[in-house]
Image (cartoon, rainbow over all chains, first blue to last red; front, side, top):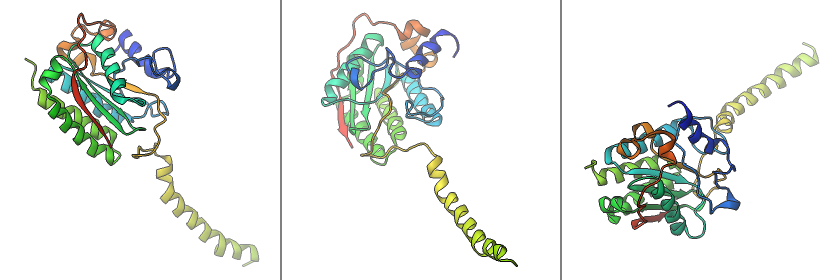
Length: 163
Length: 86
């Protein structure tokens, strides 16, 4: 990774509260996309480098294997988490083919898995529900990273290899 | 031994031992990053992660900024999934 793309993806995380990053007061603005990478822990960065590496590996492997775009959002989902998650999914779908969104709000203890189009065909709702249950087990014990990794892997296994 | 030496040996050394033990017990957890506990707060900025562009296969074969800012001709709408809470 080098050059401009990395700078662009990094900027969203480096400027919390910036134009492309949502804050509590501007929750309608969709967050920009970032790629997980090793970085120092801070209040703006909830995951440690080792945890980010696990999330990155799970997302990248799952997406490469299935041809779907797996994406994880960790942040507030508001009073209507499903509607908010589908709104985020719309942002994702506008930029990427066959998206799968895992949206979780640790503060509200809500989890939403959103599929659509070809990803909905390849991941039945029953499988998504099972993945949500497995993630829930990890989240209940406080293991956010483990839950995310488990959920992504289960969904990727269900979707199968890219055709 | 003078009074000062007596106080140092019989009060100072035990106190030092207690302080050392206290630091050894409380130090590591105080230095560690705060851990998520269900029901606890979460005052971080929202984050949104995507797969690594260079390894993400056909989805981001175009690579780079174009891919991150790219558009899909016919975006799909949300039609499935699951909800949960913990």
